[in-house]
Structure formats: C-alpha cells, structure tokens
Length: 593
Image 1 (cartoon, rainbow, N blue to C red):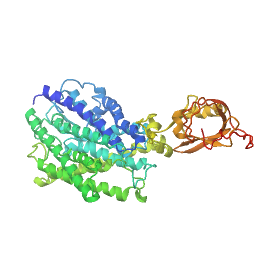
Image 2: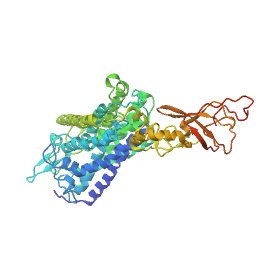
Image 3: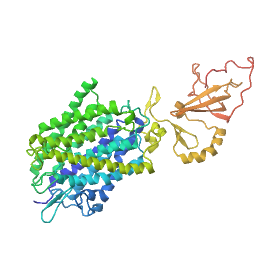
Image 4: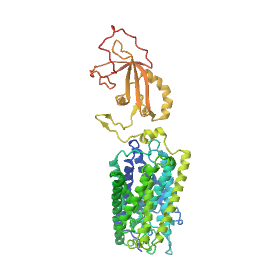
C-alpha cells in the first residue's frame, strides 16, 4: 500500500483540527451559561486552560505514551518532545497525511476530554487542584486508554499488533470509550470525592444565569462534532483489510469519502432524533418543553453516535438517537428526584450532569454498537446482534467495563492525595461569594441599570481610601491587611477618609442626636452592608455645604450637594442640649443629609 501525502486529505485534516479545537471554547460556553453568574469566568477558564496545559503535556510525553508502541498496554518514549514527528506520513496511522497533522488532530481529543470532567465539579474545586488533576489525569488515565483503543504497529515481517481494547475486538469509531466513557465516569468519581456545593440546595439547584451563551456552546459543539467522523477515516487507518478490529480500511480517498459521508449523515440524524425525543419526553413529564433540555438531548445524541457513526445504517441512527435520549432522560429524572440532596447520597453533586450525558450516553452508544453495527456499512467493522453477530456485544461490554474500572481507580488515586495535601475546594464563605473574584480577581459582568443603579448581582467592591481594597469583607491580599490594619486602622479613624460615591449602594449614614447651631449633625453612624452581614462604626464630623439643595424634605446619603469633611474623631461626645428658644427651626432635620 502506498504511503504518500495527498494534498486534499492533508488540507482537510488540518482544517478539521482547527474546527475540532473550537469545540473546547464551545464546551466552555456550554458550561458557563449553566452556572451562576459569580462563577462564570472560573467555569470558562477550567475548559480553556486545558488548551494550554494539555498541549504542553501532549508535546512532551502525551503523544508518545498514547501512540508509541511498547506493548498492548503502554506506549514508549520514541516520540518524546515530538522527536521524529514531522512532515513525512506514518504509514500505519495515516498514510495520506503528514505525521504532524495526525498528531495535532489527536491532540484535540486529548484537550477536550478533561475539560468535559470540569462540568461535574464546577463552583467549588480550587483552581490549583484542578490544574494538578488535569495533568495527572491525562498522564494516568487518558493516555493509556487512548493507547488501548487507537494504537498499533506493523512489524517488518508484515504482522500487525494493536492496543488492548482494539485487539479485543471492540468497535469505537470516534472516541466513545476514550473520550466520553472516561470523562463521564471520572466526573462521577470526582464529584463524590470533592463533595457537593455548600451554597446550593441540591433539591432545587439554581438555573443557569445565561441561556443564550449555553445555546452558543451547543452550536459550536454540534458543528465541530461533524468534523470528527469526517476526519476519522483519514486518521484511524489499518493497512491490512483483514484486520477489522476497532478500525477500518481507508485504502482509497474515494472509499474514505463514502464512509465519511455515511458517518456525517448518521451524526446529524442521531443528534436531531435525540433532540426531538427529548422534547417529547419533556411534554410527557413536565407538560412544557424547556430550552436547556432538548439542546442537552442533542449533545446526548452526539455522544451516543460517536462510537457507532461509521458502523451503522442511517435507519439505525434513528434508533440510537431515540434510545439514547430515553435512557439518559430517565437517569437525569431519577437523579433530580431521588438522588440530589438525599441523606444517603448527600455527597453526590454532579453539577451539570456530566455523568448522565457522557458516562451513561457513552455507555449506551458503545452497547448499541454491539447491536446495530453492520459490515454492509463498513466491511472493516463487525456485525452486531441484529445482523447475526453475537460476539461483538460481548467485546463491547468487556471494553466498557475495563475502561470504567481504569478510569474510576485512576481518578480516585489522583484526587485523594491532592485532597489530603493541598485540598480540593474553597471554603463555604468563598463559595458563597463566587469563584471569579476569589480565584481570579475578576468579574464577568459590569452592567448598570439606569433605573435601579448598579446590577444587583454584581459583586460590590469597597475601598479603604489608602489604596487597599476589600470585596464584600474579603481582603484581596490577606497578608497585607493582617499587617497593615493594626497600624493604619487608628490613623484612618483619626483622619476619617471619606468613602467614594461608588460605595453609596452599600453605605448608609444614620443620624443620632440633635443638630447644632450651625445645622450640622454631631454624631452619625456609617453602616456598611454586605453579603456577609453589616458592620457599623460611629463617627463625629462636620460638613460644609457648598450649595445646599432642597431635596423635597427627604434626606439622602447620596445628596448631590458637595460635602467636605473638616474634622472627625473616632467617638464624638453628645452635642450640648439646646433649649427650644435657642434652636433654629429651619436648621433641624429628621433625616440624614
């Protein structure tokens, strides 16, 4: 068989790699729209950071551990640092494209797989723990399973060896086992070890803060998903047509193009069927069609068809979409009604249903491949139960169980040491406050309502007047405030630096005592409200009114007249009582200026 680069195949795989890479931002928006506003940026970056961390890991050791060959279970170090991975094609993996193009396409799967896990543990895991988990999970879980499913070698004598699951006889067209089963069950284990969100009532979890962003994420994922089956015929090649385990022959571009079109049609039909089925289930169970439900059902359909796209008839894709949506819908319903917040499942909090959609969906897709696969569609595959082949279902079940066991054990082995050393999650106060500012010192939205003032959901920042800042009582720099507060506190109380107008939403001036002969209030309480309670301190001061303004008899702490503080003390003595004859009736006021 010839081993030569075909320009069309090369260009198509490179374009597909770029569009599949776009699925990771799509996943970020998919998850980001479903979380609370205060955790939006943190959720986005948990997916985006995988593009940086996993790329570096893949270049140094990930690719060689996944596709190098030592034996059926492990790769070797022949391609460490992408040594000898260049413009020449690799005649076993992809004979019509360059080795580097094959490598970059496979990298996109490695990037998005750990990003999927993040949806199970958002809104509580610390960012440093997440970074460590992603690195070690890719090394210990993803790379071995990718080697079992997609690796192989052709020896000089012509004999071919393949990875553990590939050699077993299981079928996986585009990553149902490697991507979805591994990430789904890893999300389940991670949610149990990390623990539930403390600030959420699991029996009535909050809805997503921005459904349009969720819809945007679904759109990017759906479009990017098409490129996976279209490119797999070029990137999952087996030279020997007699080898029909976990792959197929792409000896000619025409044959590969025909199979790619079948996979494309199956992908769309299964996703659309799953979406329509979810709408039906919503009508029957809730008597209303939600927005999030059917679109999540479309993603379930894409997950279910992933292992079977190149092995089943178009009519079978309809059955896979309906069955997959039905099974996952039942699991989501059972989780919501009987698992969330119950005493015996109090530690189970799969925030965004990663286990149901990817774990259960991937398992259903792999099992249904054992029923609906047909050699009429792909001679390099195998016949399922409905087409006279009984062994394939057993192979699929064995591959599923082996992947689940390895994923669960590997995930626990990584998370438990992190939990016992660095810790896995933020404190209750930090979770209540929001992880955007706690973990990243930034907020997602700065929106002002002209009628109501500042956005009620936006975090309030308060300054101390000396360059330091506190965000609803939490210091940005704890060390600074621990050292500086005992020293600067008395100075600030003596100087009594005026609060800015931007803090007026959380600041209220309360008047105590009578006014003096100049119309000034001798004693007032500055009350600063916040999400964690309200603190107040009493000060004595004088204001000089530049241009008194008639406010209609209603005093306000936000008066438009200019004020200038002339004197203040930490505690003011009560003003001298004045007789009614000495008091100017025009200067008295029952409210604050």
